[in-house]
Image (cartoon, rainbow, N blue to C red; front, side, top):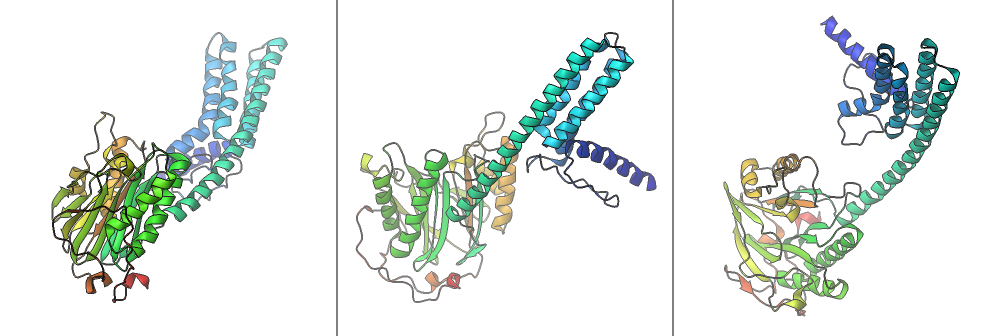
Length: 437
C-alpha cells in the first residue's frame, strides 16, 4: 500500500515539475492530495486532464529528447536546432512567462552542449542568436494568444447571457408534464445557434414550440428571437393553436428575406387526453406510448414559416390522444442528420426506444451523450431535444375547465386558413394555474 502511495506521489512530482515550468502562475498542489491534478488554464474546458498535462509538458519533453540525441550521435550539431522547437511549441501551450522559462532552459542546454562538444564560437553565436530570437517571438505570440483567449472568454460570457435570454431554462415540471431539454450549438465558441424552443403554461393549456431557422450565426439568432417573442405573446392571446401559428407567419413575412424560413412544430395541450400538433415543414415529433415509438407524420403537407406566399397549402391541426404515461419528443434536424464516421445517419427512433425511462431528463441525457459519441464528439449542426411526459394522476388548470371560445375539433386532423386574424378575445380558464405560483 505504501509503495502505491509513493508511486503516485512520484507521478505527481513529475507532472508538477513540467506544469510549473510551463505555467508558473499555477498554484502548487499539497502533497496530501493524491488525486488527479487540476487542469491547466491553457487547456480547453472539454480537454481531458491527461491530454492537458501532456500538452503542457511537451516543450520540455522535446528539449529532453534533444539532449541524448546530441550526446549519442556523431554529427552532434545536427540535433541542436531541435532545441528551438521547445520555445516555439510553448507559445501555443504556455503563458508568456512559461515561454521565457522554456527558452532560458533551451539556451542553457545549448551552451552546455556547445561547451561539451567544443563547438566553434561562430557556430555557437549563430545558433544562440537564432534560439533567442525564436524565444522572443514565441513570447510575443503567447501574449497575443492570451489576449485572444480573454476576448473569446468575454464573447462566450455575452453569448451565455444571450442564450439565457433567448432560450430560457425550462423547469422540470410544467403543468401536468415532466419536461427535459437538451441543446447543443454547432458553433461551440458562441454556444448559441439557430435552433429554438419554448414552453409556456397559458390559459389555454401548456403550449410549446421547437423550430430551426435557416442559416447560422447572428442572423439566425435574430430570427429565432423574433419567433420566440411572437410565440410567447400569441400563445397567451389566441385560443386556437392555428391562430398562434398564423401570427408567427405574418411577423416573419414582414421581416424575413425571400430565401429565409423557419421550420417549426407548435404543440398545445388544451385539455386532458388531447394533444394538438401543427407541423410547419419540421421533422415529425415522436410519440412514445408504452414501449412503442411512433413518428407523427403530417397529415397534410405545410410549408415552413415564412414561405406561405409561395404556396396555397396551409398548416393543419393534428389531434393526438395523449394518456398518462405517454411521452412526446420534439427535435431538430441536427439530431437526425448527424452522421458517424461511416456517413450513416443517427437512428433516433431506435435509440429512443433503447434509452426510454420514466424520467425525461435521464432519457435525454443518455440520448445526448450517445449522439455526441456517435458523431465523434462534436456536432456539425445545431441540435435541440425537448421531451414531455405526462405522469399518471397529473392534472392542470386547462384540464379542470377547457377555455371558453375555442373551437371544438374532432379527433381527425382538420385544416383551415390561419393567416387571418381571429378577432376573438381570449377568455382564460377559471381554474388557477399551478404554474403561475
